[in-house]
Every structure is written in structure tokens, then in C-alpha cells.
Image (cartoon, rainbow over all chains, first blue to last red; front, side):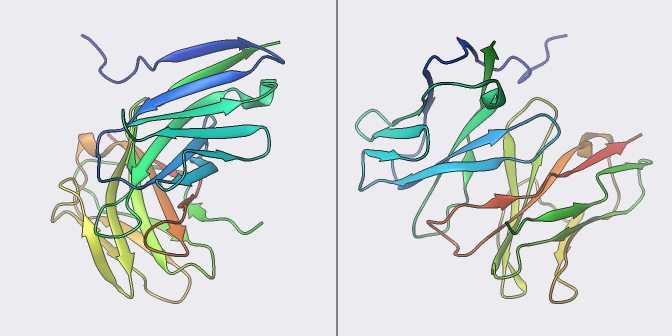
Length: 113
Length: 114
């Protein structure tokens, strides 16, 4: 039978290229967003976050872009390295109120050396 | 860097048995969470905990589940009578604030119910 949820969107990039991972979030009331990286056998690892009063935030080799109009979030990774290979999840939540952090489906990034 | 630690890394149990999953959150964090991830699927919220009581829980967190902070460092998830569908990775997380700050996750406990 079909294995629901096992077919993650995948992205393959050459080492050294830039990667862009996209996420559509569901709740227009969400005002806090996080990107997590999950390597095999490990828990989600915090990468970068952004609040809804910003549309861009940069970290070390990573940039998060937020488009609230279309409820879209992206993660850009510059000069992708083999160690960046993992599943990437976006998560949405609220700065206030009783909304727990909700994870998206995940994208598997494979870096080709 | 401080981290969330979880034990055991893998727990195998028979259907109907009780299991306790253990977590030591980051020491200066005040908010604690359990999430689970069925193989290959999304990370799903189970419960949040603050000031010795449950803040929120999802539909998954039914009467078979309970959480406890028995002392100043441990945070536990108990499943009273395990079912086959409880097989998953269970992640503990902690955060400094309830909202607007990232959750820091442990490496999980893989629960296998046979």
C-alpha cells in the first residue's frame, strides 16, 4: 500500500551552489517562524528564526525570507556543503497566545560532491 | 553549548505495557515540550508544560499519556498502555520563553511497540 508521508520533497544541489528551500505555512495568524535541520537519527536542530515584523533575516551562510502576503517562507543556504545534507523543516507559531509550534512536512536536501 | 538530553535512545516494549521516556531540559529553560515523529512524517506536537502543569495538549495526547517533572531537572513522558501506533520517535524540547523563542530539541527516544 501507499506509505503516506514517506515521500518528502527533495532538492539536490551541487556542492558550492546556493540552495533555496521553500515552505508554505497555513495559519495567517502565525507571527513567528523557525527553520530546523534534522540529520538522520537526531532531533531537529535550530537554524534561524524570524518574526512577522521582518521580511528577511540573515545568519551565517543562511537567509530566511518571509512573504506574509502569500504565506511563504524560504531558507537560502549559501555555498552548500556536504554537511548541509539533511531534512529541513519550517515551523510556525505565535509570539503570543496559545498556539504551539507547528511543523511543516520537510524537504530533504542532498548535496552532491 | 547546553543541550537537551533524552534517555533511553531506543525503547522496545510490548503492546499494553507502560513506558516512561526521560528528558533533561536545558537548565535555565522554563518551558518544556514533547513532540513525536512517526517514521518519515512530520514532527507533531503532543504537550507543553510550564510551572508544573500542562499548558497545552494536542488531540494525540489522550488519557494514556501523562507528563511529570518529578524533580528540578527531569521531565518525563509516560504512556500507560502502549499501542502499536505509539511506535515513533519522541522528542523532548525546552525553551526560555513560551512564545517567540526557539525550541531546543533532544535527539529523541525511538519507541518500538511490538
